[in-house]
Each structure stands twice: as structure tokens, then as C-alpha cells.
Amino acid sequence: MSESAGGSQDVTRAEVCVVACAEAWRGDGELLASPFGTIPSAGARLARLTFEPDLVLTDGEGALMANTPGVSGPRGELLLEAWLPYRRVFDVVWSGRRHVMMIATQIDRYGNQNISAIGDWAKPKAQLVGVRGAPGNTVNHPTSYWVPSHSPRAFVEHVDVVCGVGYDRAASAGESATRHHDLRVVVTNLAVLDFETPDHAMRLRSVHPGVSAADVQRVAKQYLSEEQGTTGWFVPTPQAGEKGS
Amino acid sequence: MVGELRSGMTIGFGGWGSRRKPMAAVRAILRAGIDDLTVVSYGGPDVGLLCAYGRVRKVVFGFVTLDSIALDPHFRRARQEGSVEAMEVDEGMFYLGLLAASQRVPFLPTRAGLGSDVMRLNPQLRTVVSPYDDREELVAVPALELDAAFVHLNRADTSGNGQVLGPDPFFDDLFLGAAQRRFVTAERVVAPGELLGEGPIQTITVTRLLTDAVAQCERGAHFTSCAPDYGRDEEFQGLYAKSAADQESWRSFSSKYVEVDEAGYRAALRELSETSRSSGGAG
Image 1 (cartoon, chains in turn green, purple):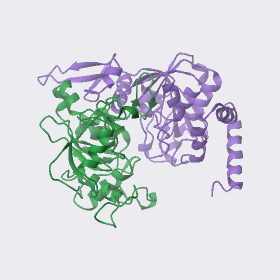
Image 2 (cartoon, chains in turn yellow, red; image 1 turned 60 degrees about the vertical axis):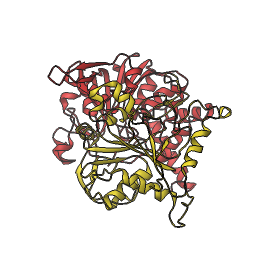
Image 3 (cartoon, chains in turn purple, yellow; image 1 turned 90 degrees about the vertical axis):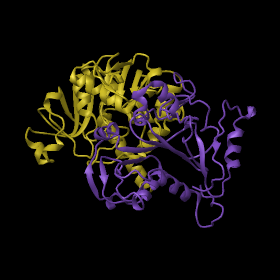
Image 4 (spheres, chains in turn cyan, red; image 1 turned 30 degrees about the vertical axis):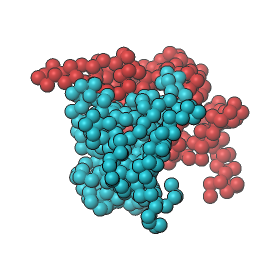
């Protein structure tokens, strides 16, 4: 993402995305921020260095960082504040004191996310990493998503495997699933989307500088193209008159 | 250790992704010709290698990754060809399954899994309703009982106590606790009482109550990481991943690095590191 954002020559799109990711943790106070991917990781660090100084961040191994070194900086710069091996991460997940930003390979209108497999799960067209902690994360604590490429392949009518639980699926699973279910935002290379609609259908919250709502819809509409072999479609509901992230 | 295994067993492997995997044990299993295995793992190249040799009937997993390489190509191929069955669950459900087996209870409850396709893809999974006034419906994660488990630790003693000097003990003690036969390999095996000379008491996370046999196995996690003894061998991991490209690459990799005994393996690694030094590859 080296293209520069329109309107300002010295801000890159990547930087805009980092800021948009950082905003996901605004208001969270003292909880474990768990970003996946370079841009969300930079975003979580930016949030802690500016408006959310109490956020807790891991070093990606078994510890929490007291300082905030750069993403993939030398480990020698790390100052650690506490031990948090993976088994204890689950204690944090199940206590609710965490806000994760996971990657979504596929995501649908109600925020169901797939990182398991493309196609038929029994014999996938493409095996991905696996459900990981997505089922547990989404019914236990706030969850946001990062979609590096806002495309029809990512935004689908129905995901092939529901890993992260969306609003519709949580509702149909009952009160135990909805009690702590809280999807926040979906940040992409083009826009920020959220679920602040009456039925929690995803809506376009803002577009990044240099992107228009029409650009986002154009990406979605390409999905209707039969010649591209696409199978579903998704047009986010734009929020009138809002720009920037 | 491997002599006690039989085809068709359910075997758990400790570690996480491409970290502290009992790779020497995996190679020994491959050499012993044991197959039709159900493999239970926070998956890394242990899963991939066993799949590449067609020894796996079923994989029980929440993920399979090489960490610095997102996906294991051997595992991917096996899944995409439909040659292995899968039980795919949330990472936390996996933890509770091992814990339930360790504690000899049939299940443990959790919210994890509710509303997700984990419930659809594993029709054997059930929910349970809280007997208390809240009446919450939760997933009842079944005990993940293992016939055998292998873990690789930094140190162990001859009585079977085990020590993790790296940042994370992962779930190794639970793999051992969930298994009938419990095997520990370690970078170094010392006399009882000497582990305290290696690190503080809190690093001795495996007690001899959990182990049946111990073997010293230097670089027994290679090419996965075994901090602080050694990091992941990224160059070798790259070779492993590339060996999935075609038959020829795979034959070359497997004959040089898998179908050899441990002495042969170490010799092949020495040769690799000399080649890479002389070509400037390690620079």
C-alpha cells in the first residue's frame, strides 16, 4: 500500500490504516489489545502511545511489554512487565478483558468471519490457518477485524466457515452467545465499517482520505460479475455525508 | 519410546505452531512406519510432516501454522486432496479438552464454539445447560484422550521431571496428563535435583508424575524454535516448505533429512550450514 492518500502528499494509505486501526481501541482503557498483522500491531501501539495509555500489549511470545517499541523491532529494546503464557491468555479471553483485532479472509454482512477454509470444509479448495481462537474470542470479548484488501473475495454474502461469530449467528445461538458478543469495527485498505444499524448489518462508517463511497461500492458491485465467477455480493450501507477516518 | 506405539493410535504432540515441537520423535515415528494416526496438536510441522508421509487418518487441531510462514503446505495439500479427516475446534476448546482428559472428567463447559461452525463441522459436540438458576447453555468440550503424548523440553532429569527455560510452557503438561503413555525428550537430561542449577523452581513445569520415559535429544525440536537453547532455523524451515512444491523436491528433502537416523540428520544439517556459509547464504 504505497499509494499516497488524496488530499495530503505526505500521508500514506498505510498510515491512514494504522490510525484507523488505533481508533478501534479508543475508549477501551485497561485491557489486553491483541492485534494480528503489521498494520493492526502498529495501530495498537499508536493507540497506547497517544489516547489509550493503559492498554496492555503482548510481545507475541509469553510476556507483556512495559514499553512500546516498534513492530518487529529488535527484542533487545523490549522491557517486559509481566508473564502471560498462552494458557493464561485464555483466562484473559474468558474474563472479557481483551479486544482483539483479527484478520478476516472472508467476512459477511453480519460480521461472520472465516480463516479456516475456502470452499467445502470437508475437502477445501484452499485450506487456511484454522479457526484459531475466533469462535471463543467473538462470544467472550470485543472483536474487530482487519481486511488488508477490500475486495469481493473478502466481502461475501455468506462465509464458507463461520469462525468468528457474527451478530446473526450469535443471536440464533442464544443468550450465552450474545451476552458478551461485541463486534466493533472492520478496518480495510479503503474504509472503516461498523455494525451500528438496527439489525447489526455492516455499514460503511467512513472512507479513507482519497476514497469515495462510490469506490467502495464499485468494489462490491464487481462482485456481481458472472464472468468473474463470483458467487455472492455485498454492498455496505453508506452513512450519509461522512468522510475520512 | 516409539517401540510402544501402534498404528491407529491417537497421539498428542506438545509445543505450539513452529515452537518447541518434538521433531526428533516425529522423525522416529516416521521411520518406524506407524500409520493411521489421529494427531492431536497445536499444529506446526509435526502435523505437516506426518501428513506428507500419509501417516495420518485424522488431525485434531485449532490451527496449523509455521509461524514465520503462515501456512504449512504439506498439511494444506493433505486437506485439499481430502486425504485426512479433521476435527477442527477453537484453541481454547482444545485446551479444555486436554484439561478434561487430564482431570478424568467427560467434558468441560465454555462459551467458545457457540454460534460458530465448529458445532456444525463436529456433529459429535454437545451443549450442556447450567444446573444453576442462570440456566446458561454452554458447549461441553469432550475430553481429548490420548493413547500417547510426546513433548520436547529444554531440560529433564532421569526421574522424569521436566523444565522449560523458554518463555512459554505451552500446554505440554496437559498433553502428558491426557495420555496413557507419556514421553519426554529434552535437550539435556541431568541427575535428579540438578534442574535447579539450570533455572528457578517455577521453570520445572513437568513433574515425574506425568512422565513414563525420558530421552536426551539434542536439537530435538529442530527446525522449530527451542528458546533459549536455539531459535527457529528459518532457512531449514524454508526448505521444508519448498519441498511441498513437487515430487522431486519432496524426494530430495525426505531422503536427506527424514529417512536418516539422528546422527545422519545432524550430519546433513552440518553439511547444509557449511554450504550456506560458503555461498554466503547465512550472511
